[in-house]
Structure formats: C-alpha cells, structure tokens
Image 1 (cartoon, rainbow over the protein chains, first blue to last red):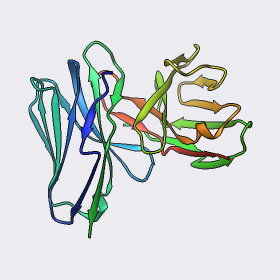
Image 2 (cartoon, chains in turn yellow, blue):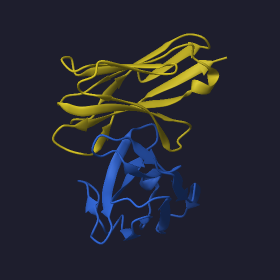
Image 3 (cartoon, each protein chain N blue to C red):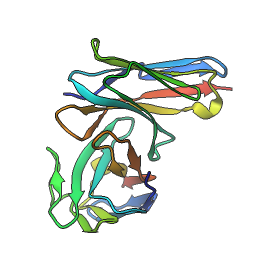
Image 4 (cartoon, rainbow over the protein chains, first blue to last red):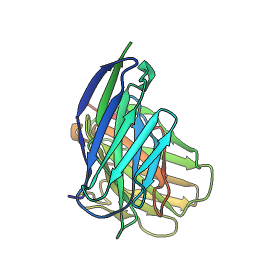
Length: 111
Length: 114
C-alpha cells in the first residue's frame, strides 16, 4: 500500500504545549499535504509541501519533509483546545494524480 | 478554492433501503471524488466522477452498490444502495487534489444504517 502511515494514532496534550505528528510513506511523491477533520466532518486543507521543499510554515503550523526517509512531520505550536481534531497526511505520488490519505492522528488538547 | 455543499449532513436509514447524497460545487470542475470513511478510519476513495462519462470505481466498489451521477460540471450524486449496517460511514465528496493543488471537501454525510 502506498498509504501514508501516521503516528501516533492518538495524542493528548495540555493547552500551550506543542503537538507533533508524523507521517511515513513508501513511494516517491509529488507533494505531501496535511488536513484537519473536526468531529467526522469534511476535511480542511492545512498545508502543502512539495517534494523539493524541506520545511514550510503557516501560522502555528510547521511542516517538515524528508524525502530520503520518506517521512513528514506536522508541528502545532502553543496548542489550543480548538486544535482538537483528527489530522491526516495525504500524499500525491509522482506517477499518479490522486491523493492517498494516511490513517490519521487524533489530537486532543485539554484546557 | 472551491466551496462544496453536501447534503444530507446525516441520516439514519433502514437496512435494504437506498440513500442519495448530493454535492454542489460553486465552480465548474472536471473531476469530483467520492470517499468513504468508516468509523475511526482513514478515507477510502470510492470512485471518480467525470461529467459526461461513467464514473471510475476503485477496487472493492461497484456501480450497482454505489451508482453515481454527474449531470454537469458543478453537481454529482452518490447513491448507497440496498444498505446494510456495514455501510454505516461518513461519505465525503471532494474536488481538486490533483496536479499540485489541495483538495476541497464537502461537509460529509454521516450515515447510520439500522
């Protein structure tokens, strides 16, 4: 399977702490994307990082990509209770055009 | 960007019946995607819907069970037919996510089959 694998499956932290989620994949990629899903609703795009990029920032989000290790991480700094959600990575393979989603990390931020 | 209106947002259905889910996009798009998300799991692509042609189904999904319509470039429906409790899932429509762009999702339909 080319599906991304995420860890941890679940993460519980206190408000103000940082949250780090990891995604690993098996094939070459065009880009890797991170999405957020609140309570089983639609997914919302957070950030896209291309295969030739190593790091991107967006507000409190920081994404890194290591193509040699076929892995990516999403860091949420200074977390808030409102960050509680499921986070999914999705890869777009070089040879194809569809997104393949990882298993997701359920993040709980306790007030 | 794209705004997708998906309905119904949730439904509870009797086994053996069918449910049709609708997705309306605020702009014309070539491809629309339908996903299933079983409880606590990731998204699995059901099919890709192209306007003017038959939908392309992924392995494990068949047209008789999940017929799809795509009458124009802004609208699509997915029907879940002859439902069983195993069909209880969240169903999501999506556009984009091809090329080097992000995907946009509808709000999802939470289906419970009893």
